[in-house]
Each structure stands twice: as structure tokens, then as C-alpha cells.
Image (cartoon, rainbow, N blue to C red; front, side):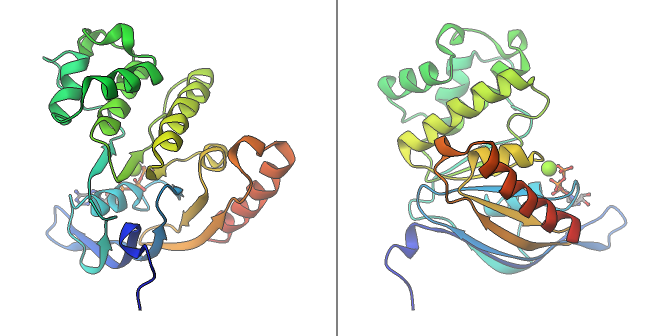
Length: 242
Ligand SMILES: Nc1ncnc2c1ncn2[C@@H]1O[C@H](COP(=O)(O)OP(=O)(O)OP(=O)(O)O)[C@@H](O)[C@H]1O
Ligand SMILES: [Mg+2]
């Protein structure tokens, strides 16, 4: 029986995902990963390096086939993907990079996104002249400009300094909350997962199984030191039990 609003959820029910290796043999990457996200809900995906987090995002995006099981996108199915590398077209300026991905975006929408991400002064810049932090913002702007029903982010702030990471997290959350976008963020930082997510999804080492789904009921703005510490202990327990 399906619940009311089910079609608006992201539903992931993966039983197996294998990929061919250069030897020709198949290697199982994902085993048993099942979860769903409600509209506007933010999930953080954490797990050991090489366990299959990027592969899971690619499977959700339909960039790689599922061997057994299924993925269902929220109704509308419009998907924004922020890859770990910004992947901008080097011969196009910032604004054109965004407009090419989102030809239907109106000027007001783009103005709002560029302003929220601090990119207004960089619309005519070319990717080669951008710092990594700016390029990451453009990748986020591009994903938002398409007005996604589901937003996937693969370690969007890796290798940025702490101050910039904190600022970009706030900007990202401002956009996600303003539009109530269902989002799944891969991160290696437990702090970041707790700061951003409504739920932390913990994967085992490869082949990845979902070993815990930890809800964070405290509203983001009220996540102070002691509350965060409690969830951190719980997550650390799951990670070390793997
Ligand atoms: N296109 C591919 N073909 C074959 N194997 C792949 C492919 N992409 C990834 N793999 C393998 O899948 C496994 C998981 O890789 P994946 O990139 O999903 O891990 P990850 O959890 O994102 O790691 P990290 O935290 O280091 O980014 C690795 O063993 C990797 O070698
Ligand atoms: Mg990865």
C-alpha cells in the first residue's frame, strides 16, 4: 500500500550494484542500501573511503545501472548534481555555464542564486580565473538553477579552508531551506553531516550496506555543542562497529 505523498519521496531500495573491473570481472560495490527522503529532507551520507558513496549518487542519478533493486526519484524527477570536481566549461563564463545547464531559468531566479552564493561580481569571469571555492559555488549555482526536485552533492566543500567551508555551508543551507529541496550530501566530516542533515545515513565498507540511519531531530539553528557531541558519539559508535 502506498502512503499519501509517496511519489514525492526519493526511494532507494538497492540490493546489489556491481561494476566491471579492467580484468573483466565484476566487483560488487553496493550490497543492501535502502532509505527514503521526504520532500525537503536533507540526508548526509558518510562511510569509509572507497565504500561506494559516489557510486550510490551516480546510481540515483541514473549514470550507472543498478544490478538488483531500484531507485525512484521524487515526482518531477528533475535532478541537480554537484560533482566533487566543479566540471565547468572552461571556454564559457560563469553565467553562461549556469545558463547552458538551466536554459529555462529566468533572470530573477539567477540573480537570487548568484547573490545568495556571493557570485554577483563573477558572472563574466571564466573558470580559469576562479579560486576553487568560487568554482564550487558556480557548480552549486548551476545545480540550483535547474530548480531540482532532488539535489545530490558529492563532498561539495572538500579541500576548502574552514572559514570558507562554514560560510558556504550556510549559503547552501539557505538555498535548500528557501526552496525546500530534497537533498543528499556525501561528506567525510561527521561535523558537517550533523550541521547540515536531518538524517545521517552511515554506510559500511565495500560492498556498502546501510548500517545506520540516525535522525537529528534538533532544528539546525539549535544544534549546539552538547547536542552535537551526543550525536557524534552515536555516529562514531556505528562507524567503529563496522
Ligand atoms: N566506473 C567504475 N568502474 C569500476 N569500478 C568503479 C567505478 N567507479 C568506482 N569504482 C569502484 O567502486 C568502489 C567505490 O568507489 P566510489 O568512488 O563510489 O567510493 P567512495 O565511497 O565515493 O570513495 P571516496 O570516499 O574515496 O570518494 C571502488 O572500489 C572503486 O574502485
Ligand atoms: Mg567519492
